[in-house]
Length: 356
Image 1 (cartoon, helix red, strand yellow):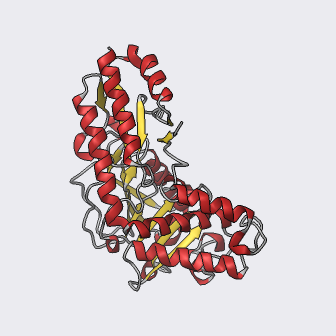
Image 2 (image 1 turned 180 degrees about the vertical axis):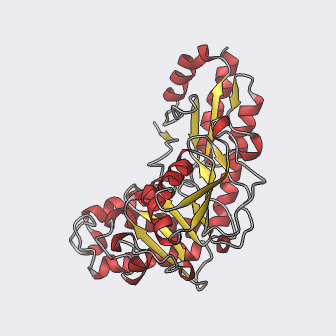
Image 3 (image 1 turned 45 degrees about the vertical axis):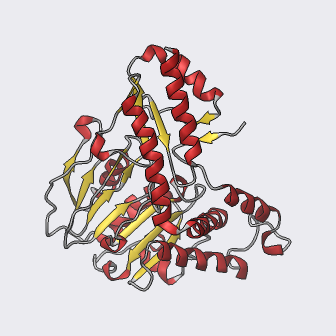
């Protein structure tokens, strides 16, 4: 039976990425060595790192625009710390948009470095919408936002115009839609949501915003140190970076971000249309802020839960259970999830309606 993987992360990856990764585990580049055991200083892996960094900038249309792409360990949670370390001045302040759990965690870290202004929050409504029409302090060292909120199924559809540096956590929707990425000065994304296996984080930073804080930054947390070392300051996560490169190659061959955005829009439209049409279900996020990556919904009558759960599991659907903060269901429709998998879920929802 085909498994339809709706896991929120680690997430589904393209089949060709699994196939090429599996071969590389046995014999990487006909070297007789596994990708799991080669030196990160070997010519073969240096080539992987160079291509991965270059391709990330190419997909984001940031090549030649003063940006550097890095692969750093520690996940997005490490970037909650690294961003203020590298951007908040001594006695400075930063502005944050509180739109979900991970945004809130980023705020907690920033407070350790200086004044942290929360410009708006949707916490009181259990983060079921994206705050809008807020004012960003002009004297803040940077503004931080989270583009997509996996737990609550919300996504920023527009971003504020400001003259201060903009930092964005794009962990769960990186490479999924066309944006003017040059509007962002620092982008970070944990690989395991939409790019590769857990273990590495893509960081894209505009070099001109660095070295302005007056702080002494620990070397391992200093973006400039990582740039100078070409993401080899310490031993990188070899396999996750290689798998991320394969995923980016797959995306480029597909037609890039513009091509995958059309597919993602079709998947989201298919599922949200059924959620709104079917009287047994309702979405939990405000319609205007619904995420194309993570659709959250609940049954109107919880007595149908046992029946529905049995049906979708029998259909080969995996990872549909919602986060405990929201309950119900969460369908994570990352880039590699095919439209046919969404149709299977919609068919099960229709079948439940006919059965009740």
